[in-house]
Length: 295
Ligand SMILES: CC(C)(COP(=O)(O)OP(=O)(O)OC[C@H]1O[C@@H](n2cnc3c(N)ncnc32)[C@H](O)[C@@H]1OP(=O)(O)O)[C@@H](O)C(=O)NCCC(=O)NCCS
Image (cartoon, rainbow, N blue to C red; front, side):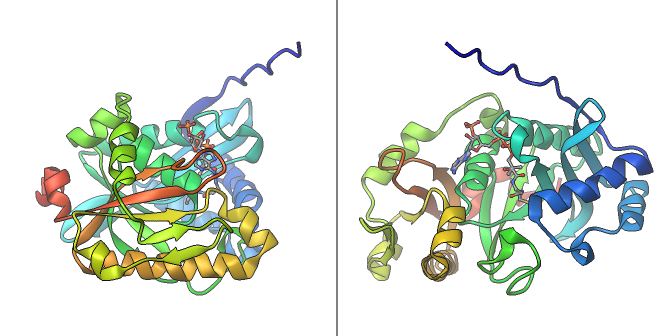
């Protein structure tokens, strides 16, 4: 039997020097496939670092294999950290590095007495949704259409740049339970088994819209997405666009009607099937009271 490849020993540490920050440029280009003009300028990286922003890297020896960058911001009068980039090199994925970088970022923010972190991600990316909702415990009540404009030079931005703006109340009970390993999957699967999704993945892999008023009358709404939008974007860009427009419509309608995005389940009908979001009716503070206080 072939021997399992040993996991490399990775060190997670702050990016301190100009040399460290320079390594980020190459990684940004590799992960996002962006043009030179879209790489964060080194001078900006140095300035944000000096002004208190959080830069953490994952190293395999001297090689930077992942990083996370968050800067200080203000939301509704509250100081928060906005995490702008998280990346792990392809050969190092699925080793929990993305998760560990987020934990390191959380530790540093809490040490600065900042309990709230926000970031954005593409809601069609099942992998990011799983990391964000299931493993980290974020919630969201905000959908941004074409957040970075209709396109950028990045290969990850070819199907517009819609984003869910997520909140991570880092000291909340919800997040602490997630980080202690609480897995909400059985409750989420149970809720999903009783819902007709507002967007449903049909047998041909296309999105089908179901009755909006019936969905809005319920306590919960499900929105299905494909489990691998990247391959659809490559093989069938028109279908990828259809998924963008349908899910954009569904998220916007549901959020406007007072729902928030509470959970994500990556396999709802077997490994090859779709993934699904669960949205709950009501203010986010019912689920995470900490989001209501400015402390
Ligand atoms: C997002 C990213 C940082 C995650 O890095 P990573 O080190 O692989 O992350 P982790 O191993 O901690 O977690 C990934 C999880 O997603 C899961 N996953 C992988 N592919 C998936 C898919 N298609 N659908 C759902 N989940 C998936 C993994 O199994 C893992 O979960 P598990 O530990 O419960 O099994 C990395 O994929 C990346 O650099 N992506 C490109 C840039 C990007 O999108 N950055 C974030 C937005 S700014």
